[in-house]
Image 1 (cartoon, rainbow, N blue to C red):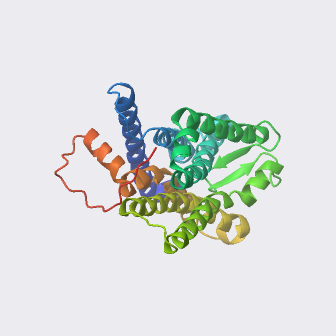
Image 2 (cartoon, one colour):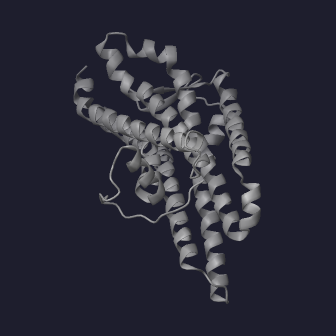
Image 3 (spheres, one colour):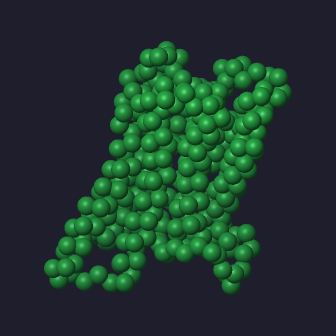
Length: 311
C-alpha cells in the first residue's frame, strides 16, 4: 500500500492526461464523421478515422491496464484476481491498438510517395474504398497474428507491479512473440527510411532541371513532420522496452516507482500520438478540432505548423 501512495501523484497526473487525449480523439473522430455523413462535406477522413478509433481503444485499454491497479487495490478486490480475470484480453486489445497504427503509418508513407510520383494513379489506387480494404486487411493480419499466441500456452498478460508483459509460460515466449519483440522496431524505421530515400531522389532530380513549387515543398515538409512524429512516438515505446529486455537486471534494480513511471512514459507516447500529429503538426485538423469546440478562428494558437492534406 505504501507503494500505491508513493505513486498516487504520478498515477493521478497520468490519468488526467489519458482522459484528455481520450476526449481529444473522441471529439476529432465525431467531428470528422459528422462533417462527412451529416453535412456531406469533403475533407480529411480515412486515416483520421482509423487512427482516432485505435487511439480510443488504446487509451481505454491503458486505463484498464495501469489505472485499474490502484483502484482494485483500494477496493480490496486484489490486483492479481483482477489481472487473471481480464488482463490477458486487455493486453491483447492494447497490443492490437498499438500495432495497427504502426503498420498503418507504413501504408500512409507509401500513399504519400505515390501521390508525389503519380498523382493520377494515386487517386485511383488509394481511393477511400480501397483504403478501407487495405486497412481492413492490415487489421485482420495483425489480429490473426496476435490471436495465435493468445490461444496458446504462452499468452501475454501485463503486470502493473513490475511494468512488464509476462508470459503464461514464463520465462518462455511464443515464437511469434519472440519474433515481434526482435523485429517490430524496424517497422517505423522502415517508414522513415522509405521517406528519406524518396526525398533524396526527388531533391536530386530537382537539381537536374525539375521544378518544385512552393506548395509541393510545403507538402513535403509536412509529410516529413507527420511521419517523423509517428516514428518517434511509436519508437519511444519500443526503445525503452529494448532497455528492459536487454538489461532486465539493471531495470529491476530501479525503485518500483521509477519502473512504473518509465512504463507510464511509454504509454504516454502512444496516448499522445494523435494529438501531436493531428493538432500540433497538422494545421487543417487543428482548425477542425478548434472549430468543433467553439474556438474562434480569430484566436491564436501558440503552435506553429505546416498545413497538410490528410486523407
